[in-house]
Length: 225
Image 1 (tube, rainbow, N blue to C red):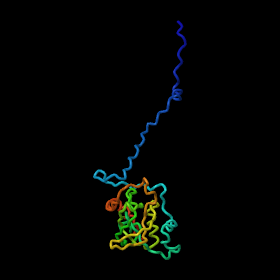
Image 2 (image 1 turned 90 degrees about the horizontal axis):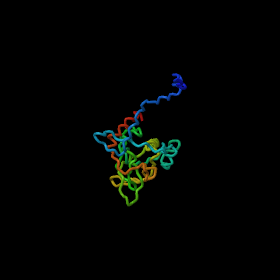
Image 3 (image 1 turned 90 degrees about the vertical axis):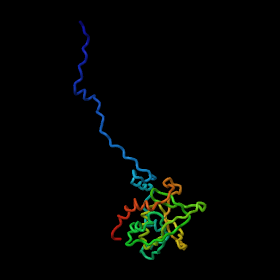
């Protein structure tokens, strides 16, 4: 009886390997990193670590010496380092702590500072750091801080580097506790738009800064100023 044509033979092992699909890579990928804590996350026994400071804006940079000289309008020494005119700086954030200022400027002794207030500004927060933006007379209020007198042009360079280009120096008049007004002081204010999304409403907590962030600044101080 005629059974018809025979079926084709099965493919050889080598041909099966050529047409087989490659095995997918099943290597497990590492999990994504956990999200960064929010800047306004409160400290608690279950969250003992403070949130990190925000990354500076992309446009931030350390100002050059020429830019610093221009901002302070001739208050620095000339190109030969002569005739430096001392003036007062008003601090309202981390630099109110004399040990922090000593570390930033690498001073041999603790700086002598005086409590003072200025008006015409209001405080906003840039992460953990306060900044000043101009305020109208209707907003009122005064900013409390510390006043300190500079003694060299190098100190201005160090202060400008510490503040970064996110801050710009502005002239102000500071009132001492005695009632005396020191005119022609300088303070660092927010260099961007006052309604920038990088800023938040809030106030600076010096004790919290001293507890959680000050050690990272003071332990970097050089033993030889």
